[in-house]
Image (cartoon, rainbow, N blue to C red):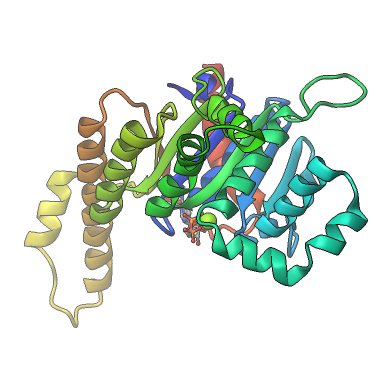
Length: 314
Ligand SMILES: Nc1ncnc2c1ncn2[C@@H]1O[C@H](COP(=O)(O)OP(=O)(O)OP(=O)(O)O)[C@@H](O)[C@H]1O
Ligand SMILES: [Mg+2]
């Protein structure tokens, strides 16, 4: 699946080892979607507000808020998803407040395994179905979920299937069926792994992809290989740098050492990138270069956005 196909979907779920760049990729995808005039929604799943700073905000919170033209954000929180869900069933806020006091809700959410995840995925399902009241068009063209880290990512998105298998009748069963229907709909949903081109992240990404295939049945999208180092130093030059490495007290030593480090890092990334591509020949791999300027706002991601748009229009 290439980038144009990816942007034709409605729901992109991202997961990968901690710190590999899931949030960065989620924001970049939203920026590139917005540039194509697609209304994008970035969804965080009860995270510590990692998306907000990209748009100059401290927090996003559990209500959808506009972040930039064509980009909206929401940070889901199981408690609010629970209240919204119950209110959808009973429709009276006072009734909710009477029967579901804070202590009860907290107890309930902690006592039922998987409930937090089910409520948040249920909310994502409803966000996908939301229509613009004026035009009756979908409110969001593309929903990008900045999912949990690897192991947790699989268990989170496995919950609707477990619920479906465990519950035989009633509204929860039909809701789980509908959620699963969306998650496994190849025309709408993809699950993409994000990784670095390094040993452990590549191993985890491989495990993640095979778990998604085996357990989730969610269609797999491209693998994002993030923060890949490039170097100006060629292989032959690296050998020469090693041969001619000056003594440590030589003023030229730091320059030689840095050039060699730059080559080694890029070479390591190249090796793991090739391993990953070899292991997943059926999946597209999208390489994102390491950005040397500190990533502070959405503007920092402009080089990647530009590259993607160019490849889409090529
Ligand atoms: N292509 C890149 N070039 C340079 N730095 C990057 C790149 N992508 C991400 N980073 C930096 O790496 C760090 C981790 O990125 P990010 O927060 O997106 O990862 P994550 O997978 O969402 O982490 P977590 O598991 O904590 O949610 C951040 O400091 C980010 O700025
Ligand atoms: Mg993150």
